[in-house]
Image (cartoon, rainbow, N blue to C red; front, side):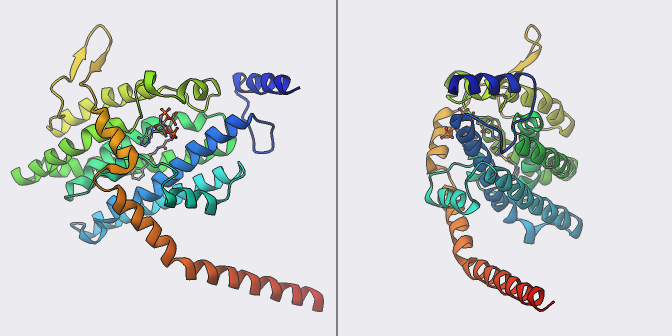
Length: 316
Ligand code: FAQ
Protein backbone atom coordinates (compact mmCIF):
# COMPACT_ATOMS: atom_id res chain seq x y z
CA UNK A 1 0.00 0.00 0.00
CA UNK A 2 2.70 2.42 1.14
CA UNK A 3 4.83 1.66 -1.94
CA UNK A 4 1.89 2.39 -4.19
CA UNK A 5 1.28 5.75 -2.54
CA UNK A 6 4.94 6.64 -2.89
CA UNK A 7 4.87 5.75 -6.58
CA UNK A 8 1.76 7.84 -7.15
CA UNK A 9 3.36 10.70 -5.27
CA UNK A 10 6.49 10.57 -7.42
CA UNK A 11 4.34 10.44 -10.57
CA UNK A 12 2.59 13.65 -9.53
CA UNK A 13 5.96 15.29 -8.95
CA UNK A 14 7.20 14.07 -12.34
CA UNK A 15 4.10 15.52 -14.00
CA UNK A 16 4.69 18.88 -12.29
CA UNK A 17 1.48 18.63 -10.24
CA UNK A 18 1.90 20.67 -7.05
CA UNK A 19 1.66 18.89 -3.71
CA UNK A 20 -0.83 20.59 -1.38
CA UNK A 21 -1.06 20.43 2.45
CA UNK A 22 -3.88 17.83 2.56
CA UNK A 23 -2.32 15.52 -0.05
CA UNK A 24 -0.59 12.33 1.02
CA UNK A 25 3.17 12.80 1.18
CA UNK A 26 6.08 10.67 2.41
CA UNK A 27 7.07 11.58 5.95
CA UNK A 28 10.58 12.37 4.75
CA UNK A 29 9.25 14.84 2.16
CA UNK A 30 7.31 16.63 4.91
CA UNK A 31 10.34 16.71 7.19
CA UNK A 32 12.69 17.92 4.47
CA UNK A 33 10.33 20.75 3.57
CA UNK A 34 9.78 21.72 7.19
CA UNK A 35 13.53 21.84 7.68
CA UNK A 36 14.22 23.90 4.56
CA UNK A 37 11.25 26.29 4.83
CA UNK A 38 11.70 26.94 8.56
CA UNK A 39 15.44 27.53 8.07
CA UNK A 40 14.60 29.87 5.24
CA UNK A 41 12.09 31.74 7.47
CA UNK A 42 14.65 32.01 10.29
CA UNK A 43 17.20 33.35 7.79
CA UNK A 44 14.85 36.15 6.77
CA UNK A 45 14.20 37.16 10.37
CA UNK A 46 17.82 36.90 11.55
CA UNK A 47 18.78 38.56 8.25
CA UNK A 48 17.03 41.75 9.41
CA UNK A 49 19.66 42.28 12.11
CA UNK A 50 22.84 43.11 10.13
CA UNK A 51 21.02 45.74 8.05
CA UNK A 52 18.85 46.95 10.94
CA UNK A 53 22.16 48.03 12.45
CA UNK A 54 22.44 50.82 9.83
CA UNK A 55 18.90 52.21 9.63
CA UNK A 56 19.60 55.05 12.07
CA UNK A 57 22.86 55.87 10.29
CA UNK A 58 21.74 55.88 6.65
CA UNK A 59 23.40 58.86 4.92
CA UNK A 60 20.16 60.56 3.81
CA UNK A 61 16.39 60.29 3.97
CA UNK A 62 16.05 58.50 0.62
CA UNK A 63 18.52 55.82 1.67
CA UNK A 64 16.88 55.47 5.07
CA UNK A 65 13.40 54.99 3.58
CA UNK A 66 14.66 52.39 1.09
CA UNK A 67 16.60 50.47 3.76
CA UNK A 68 13.64 50.56 6.17
CA UNK A 69 11.36 49.21 3.44
CA UNK A 70 13.84 46.46 2.62
CA UNK A 71 14.28 45.32 6.21
CA UNK A 72 10.51 45.39 6.67
CA UNK A 73 10.13 43.22 3.55
CA UNK A 74 12.44 40.63 5.14
CA UNK A 75 10.05 40.43 8.12
CA UNK A 76 7.20 39.87 5.67
CA UNK A 77 9.16 37.09 3.92
CA UNK A 78 9.69 35.41 7.27
CA UNK A 79 5.96 35.55 7.95
CA UNK A 80 4.93 34.04 4.59
CA UNK A 81 7.50 31.32 5.06
CA UNK A 82 6.47 30.49 8.63
CA UNK A 83 2.88 30.29 7.38
CA UNK A 84 3.90 27.96 4.53
CA UNK A 85 5.82 25.78 7.02
CA UNK A 86 2.86 25.70 9.43
CA UNK A 87 0.80 23.92 6.74
CA UNK A 88 3.15 20.96 7.30
CA UNK A 89 2.02 20.56 10.90
CA UNK A 90 4.45 22.50 13.07
CA UNK A 91 3.44 25.70 14.87
CA UNK A 92 5.39 28.92 14.55
CA UNK A 93 6.09 28.84 18.29
CA UNK A 94 7.69 25.39 17.90
CA UNK A 95 9.81 26.58 14.99
CA UNK A 96 10.95 29.62 16.94
CA UNK A 97 11.77 27.44 19.95
CA UNK A 98 14.08 25.42 17.67
CA UNK A 99 15.78 28.61 16.47
CA UNK A 100 16.22 29.92 20.00
CA UNK A 101 17.65 26.65 21.33
CA UNK A 102 20.17 26.55 18.48
CA UNK A 103 18.64 23.35 17.04
CA UNK A 104 17.45 24.98 13.80
CA UNK A 105 19.89 26.52 11.37
CA UNK A 106 19.70 29.84 9.52
CA UNK A 107 21.88 31.08 6.68
CA UNK A 108 25.58 31.36 7.45
CA UNK A 109 25.75 34.78 5.78
CA UNK A 110 23.96 36.59 8.59
CA UNK A 111 26.72 35.80 11.07
CA UNK A 112 29.05 38.41 9.60
CA UNK A 113 29.22 41.99 10.94
CA UNK A 114 28.11 45.11 9.03
CA UNK A 115 31.05 47.43 9.64
CA UNK A 116 30.42 50.34 7.25
CA UNK A 117 27.60 51.88 5.21
CA UNK A 118 29.06 50.21 2.11
CA UNK A 119 28.04 46.88 3.64
CA UNK A 120 24.40 47.88 2.93
CA UNK A 121 25.38 48.08 -0.73
CA UNK A 122 27.29 44.80 -0.71
CA UNK A 123 24.49 42.93 1.09
CA UNK A 124 21.83 44.12 -1.36
CA UNK A 125 24.01 43.44 -4.39
CA UNK A 126 25.60 40.15 -3.36
CA UNK A 127 23.47 38.58 -0.62
CA UNK A 128 20.13 39.46 -2.21
CA UNK A 129 21.66 38.64 -5.60
CA UNK A 130 22.59 35.17 -4.35
CA UNK A 131 19.19 34.82 -2.69
CA UNK A 132 17.43 35.61 -6.01
CA UNK A 133 19.55 33.05 -7.87
CA UNK A 134 18.59 30.41 -5.31
CA UNK A 135 14.97 31.47 -4.87
CA UNK A 136 13.66 32.11 -8.40
CA UNK A 137 13.75 28.34 -9.09
CA UNK A 138 11.93 27.82 -5.77
CA UNK A 139 8.87 29.53 -7.33
CA UNK A 140 8.55 26.18 -9.18
CA UNK A 141 9.26 23.99 -6.16
CA UNK A 142 6.92 21.01 -5.83
CA UNK A 143 5.16 22.09 -2.62
CA UNK A 144 2.34 24.52 -3.48
CA UNK A 145 2.38 26.85 -0.43
CA UNK A 146 6.18 27.25 -0.61
CA UNK A 147 6.15 27.90 -4.36
CA UNK A 148 3.40 30.52 -4.08
CA UNK A 149 5.12 32.30 -1.17
CA UNK A 150 8.30 32.52 -3.22
CA UNK A 151 6.65 34.44 -6.09
CA UNK A 152 6.16 37.56 -3.99
CA UNK A 153 9.43 37.09 -2.12
CA UNK A 154 11.35 37.08 -5.40
CA UNK A 155 9.66 40.25 -6.69
CA UNK A 156 10.72 42.04 -3.51
CA UNK A 157 14.23 40.57 -3.57
CA UNK A 158 14.72 42.08 -6.97
CA UNK A 159 14.05 45.58 -5.53
CA UNK A 160 16.50 44.75 -2.73
CA UNK A 161 19.23 43.76 -5.14
CA UNK A 162 18.87 46.99 -7.12
CA UNK A 163 18.79 49.03 -3.94
CA UNK A 164 22.15 47.53 -2.96
CA UNK A 165 23.69 47.78 -6.40
CA UNK A 166 22.73 51.44 -6.61
CA UNK A 167 24.52 52.12 -3.31
CA UNK A 168 27.62 50.37 -4.68
CA UNK A 169 27.39 52.35 -7.92
CA UNK A 170 27.17 55.67 -6.08
CA UNK A 171 30.10 54.81 -3.81
CA UNK A 172 32.26 53.46 -6.61
CA UNK A 173 31.74 56.65 -8.67
CA UNK A 174 32.36 58.84 -5.62
CA UNK A 175 35.53 60.01 -3.89
CA UNK A 176 38.57 57.75 -3.54
CA UNK A 177 37.57 57.14 0.06
CA UNK A 178 34.05 56.08 -0.95
CA UNK A 179 35.38 53.76 -3.66
CA UNK A 180 37.73 52.20 -1.09
CA UNK A 181 34.76 51.58 1.22
CA UNK A 182 32.93 49.81 -1.61
CA UNK A 183 35.98 47.66 -2.42
CA UNK A 184 36.47 46.78 1.24
CA UNK A 185 32.82 45.68 1.51
CA UNK A 186 33.18 43.53 -1.62
CA UNK A 187 36.35 41.98 -0.18
CA UNK A 188 34.58 40.99 3.02
CA UNK A 189 31.22 39.84 1.55
CA UNK A 190 32.31 38.00 -1.61
CA UNK A 191 33.36 34.66 -0.14
CA UNK A 192 30.58 34.43 2.48
CA UNK A 193 28.09 35.19 -0.33
CA UNK A 194 29.20 32.30 -2.49
CA UNK A 195 29.15 30.04 0.60
CA UNK A 196 25.41 30.78 0.92
CA UNK A 197 24.66 28.19 -1.78
CA UNK A 198 25.75 25.44 0.62
CA UNK A 199 28.37 22.68 0.39
CA UNK A 200 29.65 21.34 -2.92
CA UNK A 201 27.27 18.84 -4.52
CA UNK A 202 29.37 15.82 -3.54
CA UNK A 203 29.21 16.98 0.10
CA UNK A 204 25.52 17.90 0.13
CA UNK A 205 23.62 15.08 1.86
CA UNK A 206 20.12 16.43 1.09
CA UNK A 207 20.52 17.33 -2.58
CA UNK A 208 19.88 14.03 -4.38
CA UNK A 209 16.52 13.38 -2.73
CA UNK A 210 15.46 17.04 -2.81
CA UNK A 211 16.20 17.19 -6.55
CA UNK A 212 14.21 13.99 -7.16
CA UNK A 213 11.25 15.48 -5.29
CA UNK A 214 11.77 18.77 -7.14
CA UNK A 215 12.06 20.66 -3.87
CA UNK A 216 15.35 21.86 -5.31
CA UNK A 217 15.49 22.51 -9.06
CA UNK A 218 19.22 23.14 -9.38
CA UNK A 219 22.12 21.84 -7.34
CA UNK A 220 24.15 24.02 -4.96
CA UNK A 221 27.13 24.14 -7.37
CA UNK A 222 24.98 24.92 -10.41
CA UNK A 223 23.44 27.92 -8.66
CA UNK A 224 26.79 29.11 -7.30
CA UNK A 225 28.25 28.99 -10.81
CA UNK A 226 25.31 30.95 -12.26
CA UNK A 227 25.77 33.57 -9.54
CA UNK A 228 29.50 33.96 -10.20
CA UNK A 229 28.88 34.17 -13.96
CA UNK A 230 26.39 37.05 -13.69
CA UNK A 231 28.19 38.93 -10.92
CA UNK A 232 31.59 39.32 -12.59
CA UNK A 233 30.35 41.80 -15.21
CA UNK A 234 28.42 43.72 -12.52
CA UNK A 235 31.69 44.16 -10.61
CA UNK A 236 33.38 45.35 -13.81
CA UNK A 237 30.73 48.06 -14.29
CA UNK A 238 31.43 49.19 -10.73
CA UNK A 239 35.17 49.20 -11.43
CA UNK A 240 35.72 46.95 -8.41
CA UNK A 241 37.84 43.81 -8.13
CA UNK A 242 36.42 40.49 -6.94
CA UNK A 243 38.90 39.20 -4.32
CA UNK A 244 39.74 35.92 -6.06
CA UNK A 245 43.00 35.59 -8.00
CA UNK A 246 41.77 32.34 -9.59
CA UNK A 247 38.68 33.95 -11.10
CA UNK A 248 39.06 33.50 -14.85
CA UNK A 249 36.80 32.98 -17.88
CA UNK A 250 37.00 29.39 -19.09
CA UNK A 251 36.21 29.36 -22.81
CA UNK A 252 35.82 25.57 -22.97
CA UNK A 253 33.32 25.42 -20.10
CA UNK A 254 31.60 28.67 -21.02
CA UNK A 255 31.78 29.68 -17.36
CA UNK A 256 34.08 31.48 -14.95
CA UNK A 257 36.48 29.29 -12.97
CA UNK A 258 36.88 30.45 -9.41
CA UNK A 259 39.04 29.69 -6.37
CA UNK A 260 38.42 27.17 -3.62
CA UNK A 261 36.00 28.15 -0.90
CA UNK A 262 37.28 28.02 2.67
CA UNK A 263 34.95 25.24 3.85
CA UNK A 264 36.51 25.22 7.31
CA UNK A 265 35.26 28.76 7.77
CA UNK A 266 31.79 27.77 6.48
CA UNK A 267 31.61 24.77 8.82
CA UNK A 268 32.68 26.88 11.79
CA UNK A 269 30.02 29.50 11.05
CA UNK A 270 27.31 26.86 10.59
CA UNK A 271 28.41 25.20 13.85
CA UNK A 272 27.72 28.46 15.71
CA UNK A 273 31.26 29.86 15.86
CA UNK A 274 31.09 32.65 13.28
CA UNK A 275 31.90 36.27 14.14
CA UNK A 276 28.31 37.19 15.16
CA UNK A 277 26.43 33.92 15.84
CA UNK A 278 26.07 34.51 19.56
CA UNK A 279 25.05 38.14 19.13
CA UNK A 280 22.43 37.25 16.48
CA UNK A 281 20.85 34.49 18.54
CA UNK A 282 20.83 36.65 21.66
CA UNK A 283 19.06 39.46 19.77
CA UNK A 284 16.33 37.01 18.66
CA UNK A 285 15.91 35.45 22.11
CA UNK A 286 15.78 38.90 23.77
CA UNK A 287 13.15 40.06 21.25
CA UNK A 288 11.07 36.96 22.00
CA UNK A 289 11.29 37.51 25.76
CA UNK A 290 10.63 41.24 25.58
CA UNK A 291 7.63 40.53 23.34
CA UNK A 292 5.90 38.27 25.88
CA UNK A 293 3.58 41.04 27.09
CA UNK A 294 2.59 41.88 23.50
CA UNK A 295 1.64 38.26 22.77
CA UNK A 296 -0.28 38.03 26.07
CA UNK A 297 -2.09 41.31 25.39
CA UNK A 298 -3.02 40.17 21.86
CA UNK A 299 -4.45 36.90 23.20
CA UNK A 300 -6.37 38.70 25.99
CA UNK A 301 -7.79 41.15 23.43
CA UNK A 302 -8.82 38.36 21.06
CA UNK A 303 -10.57 36.53 23.91
CA UNK A 304 -12.35 39.70 25.02
CA UNK A 305 -13.51 40.42 21.48
CA UNK A 306 -14.72 36.85 20.96
CA UNK A 307 -16.68 37.04 24.21
CA UNK A 308 -18.20 40.39 23.20
CA UNK A 309 -19.18 38.99 19.78
CA UNK A 310 -20.76 35.93 21.44
CA UNK A 311 -22.77 38.13 23.79
CA UNK A 312 -24.06 40.32 20.98
CA UNK A 313 -25.02 37.22 18.90
CA UNK A 314 -26.93 35.87 21.88
CA UNK A 315 -28.68 39.18 22.43
CA UNK A 316 -29.81 39.40 18.77
N1 FAQ B 1 24.05 28.33 5.96
O1 FAQ B 1 22.52 19.09 1.97
P1 FAQ B 1 22.64 20.57 1.89
C1 FAQ B 1 18.12 35.53 2.11
C2 FAQ B 1 23.26 23.30 5.77
S1 FAQ B 1 17.49 34.08 2.68
C3 FAQ B 1 23.74 27.49 6.95
O2 FAQ B 1 23.11 21.16 0.63
P2 FAQ B 1 19.99 21.69 1.47
C4 FAQ B 1 17.21 36.73 1.96
C5 FAQ B 1 21.96 22.64 5.37
O3 FAQ B 1 20.85 23.25 6.04
C6 FAQ B 1 18.90 32.99 2.76
N2 FAQ B 1 23.53 26.17 6.75
O4 FAQ B 1 21.23 21.23 2.36
C7 FAQ B 1 17.79 37.88 2.64
C8 FAQ B 1 22.21 21.23 5.79
O5 FAQ B 1 22.05 21.08 7.20
P3 FAQ B 1 20.78 20.28 7.86
C9 FAQ B 1 18.45 31.64 3.06
C10 FAQ B 1 23.64 25.73 5.48
O6 FAQ B 1 18.92 22.15 2.39
C11 FAQ B 1 18.76 38.68 2.04
C12 FAQ B 1 23.69 21.04 5.53
O7 FAQ B 1 24.25 22.34 5.49
N3 FAQ B 1 17.95 31.01 1.87
O8 FAQ B 1 19.24 35.54 1.88
C13 FAQ B 1 23.95 26.56 4.41
O9 FAQ B 1 19.64 20.66 0.46
C14 FAQ B 1 19.29 39.79 2.71
C15 FAQ B 1 23.96 20.30 4.23
O10 FAQ B 1 23.58 21.09 3.08
C16 FAQ B 1 17.31 29.83 1.92
O11 FAQ B 1 17.12 29.26 2.98
C17 FAQ B 1 24.17 27.91 4.68
N4 FAQ B 1 24.48 28.79 3.72
O12 FAQ B 1 20.56 22.96 0.66
C18 FAQ B 1 17.34 38.21 3.91
C19 FAQ B 1 16.81 29.29 0.60
N5 FAQ B 1 23.99 25.81 3.28
O13 FAQ B 1 19.57 21.15 7.63
C20 FAQ B 1 17.88 39.31 4.58
C21 FAQ B 1 16.15 27.94 0.72
C22 FAQ B 1 23.73 24.55 3.66
O14 FAQ B 1 20.64 18.98 7.13
C23 FAQ B 1 18.83 40.10 3.97
N6 FAQ B 1 17.08 26.90 1.09
N7 FAQ B 1 23.53 24.49 4.97
O15 FAQ B 1 21.13 20.17 9.30
C24 FAQ B 1 17.81 26.19 0.19
O16 FAQ B 1 17.75 26.41 -1.01
C25 FAQ B 1 18.66 25.06 0.72
O17 FAQ B 1 18.21 24.76 2.03
C26 FAQ B 1 20.19 25.36 0.73
C27 FAQ B 1 20.91 24.16 1.34
C28 FAQ B 1 20.67 25.54 -0.71
C29 FAQ B 1 20.49 26.61 1.55
